[in-house]
Image (tube, rainbow, N blue to C red; front, side):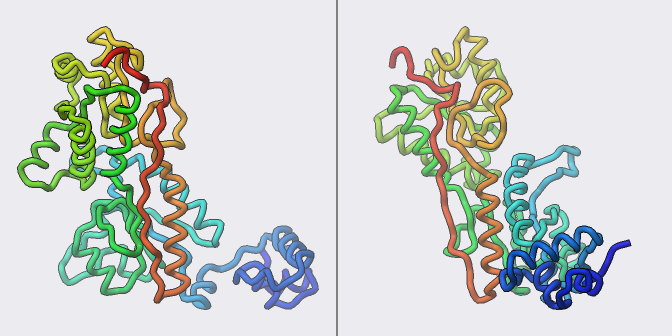
Length: 346
């Protein structure tokens, strides 16, 4: 049977307030390290576990942060945005070190069943604040503003002066394209999805905000060096190989590391070796994932570290309600990896 504050205090020979300060209130720095150690040791021996409900009443804080992302597609039963996992782990590690925890919120939970109702995740004061990924409806964003609930926006393409954390997608593509050019490449292709590209051309609103920015970054660098832009349409291997052969490419830029194997298969069809005959560079390489085979070259994206930064920004806003965290844009670093090299001839 677990003990309470009174039992721990009696066994340690200190006051209940001392035990509460050390174990529950984050005021352990007021006490001698030996006292802190003794209280924690006895609490562990007596299986003490604090009541979160009591802490909520005292602090008016649940200590729970909601992470909102589109993780599941009900249309085809597939998972989406599985690459946010390193970010989620980074945020969780930071929050737990500061006596907070993270709760997953599906994007679908932010959509109210009725215009008169609040979304399900907001009907109770369960979350102190949110970290939101791309894909939230404008109505939900407005509700958060009205309720004055702190939010850190991550990769949503909404870069306001405060509380936003985004990659600079245009700069990332410029850096990657320029790095390939400096290695000696001139015939560089950018791989795009045919449907997404058509949507970008027709409406100016591609599936993700990064799409147009990446194209503009690539286009600007190619024009700067008087080189023609080459868009590789689609993800079908044979069609991709035909386009690569037509333009005699020495390098291909993919949107993500997930597309690299497709280009590798297309290169094999053409009898090309990677990176000796063809370099493959991804615009999004997760730095915390162990490579299965080759280490993919491109622009490194450390989502784990970004998750920690987002959690820190949110806790800063929670500690001071009238204070907002300055926004942050980042580019990452270029890495050659095992898939990028200098061309034999240009």
